[in-house]
Image (tube, rainbow, N blue to C red):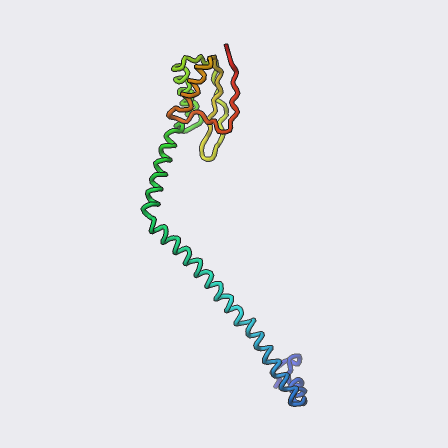
Length: 183
């Protein structure tokens, strides 16, 4: 009864090796042993060493994360206080923005602020035009174009009043304001 297929029949090989001198058979066994050791090392030991190294790295990462969380816990009160201050600053900052659920409502509020400021400074408003709104991050910018009849003293007073209004009216960060002077 044949157990192995003819291509894998090892009997002729074994018989041939048995006919070799003893010294050659010993060298063959040593070579096969070394081959098995190398295959065992690269097939079993090396992957286990790499796995252990990955686990060590993961443990170190988790320990660093734990230290970071412990630092947060140790500074919990300070962090909570900073968070509350930021919340208050945000609420105060948002209180300075124009209210209104739509750009049209915000534009109307802006026109009212400008109307009050121009009346207080004795400035004559020739025309007012609400320009298309633009998105600025999570906020909308509602620009307003004005044509005024004003002298220099009134203009300075008006710009000062608008810039230091309770609501943020003037955004002069990197803007090009061009003015047309009227008599």
